[in-house]
Length: 320
Image (tube, rainbow, N blue to C red):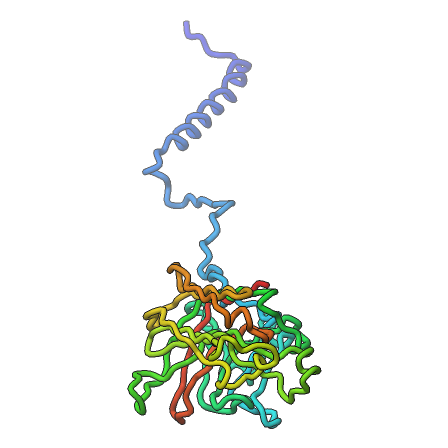
């Protein structure tokens, strides 16, 4: 006897059968391996990695470490036609103001390749007391008054890193190159002595001049011809009273070097790089009657029409 399922049984099992079929198809479709993924499957990355910056910010430009708040600069030109070299004051140079001065830029400008400040000069307009021109910084303790200066009793320290980058050849003497002064302690007659003696000029002799000569660094230091000189006679600024004694620190060539000047009563201490300091201690320093200010830069000692010099400073510091 054949047994047929009842209608109720068929109705009961048919949905279960279709459900099983659908589950089988679904499982079979999902079992495809990674290598067998269908071509029409599109994978969307909701959080893609950002592209690397094609133009990252460059390193910031580095300039020479020089604070112009107590320096003015003298140039070898007279663009304002007042009969003397043009000068620009600390207020015009600070905060990179020198970079915006068109008249200054040909003579004092940045070289960002080596983070230096270039001083360029040639024979041009000169100061009253010299036949040589310069692109040179002059220290101003009081930025608004050049008559305020310092004594050896107060003392001062000047430190700088620099090099002679290029200088013209000297074909008229036994020297290979022209020479330049790169640092100075310059003397100046005090306001008190000006009033007492009625001098027409306050210009004093340079106590110390640091020369670059044929690649060597030389110190020229003022000394008394007659060490018994005293009183008001000490204020004579001529070569009849004061002359230069000299010391050669040796070759620096066209390479960077560091130099430090420490000035106190009766003593000058001069140091090249890490060498043993060279010290002046003498009667002339004890009797030095002038006030002082530091100078640094490029003071070319030539009047040849084709002469030139480029001197770089990487840093320059003053303390008192």
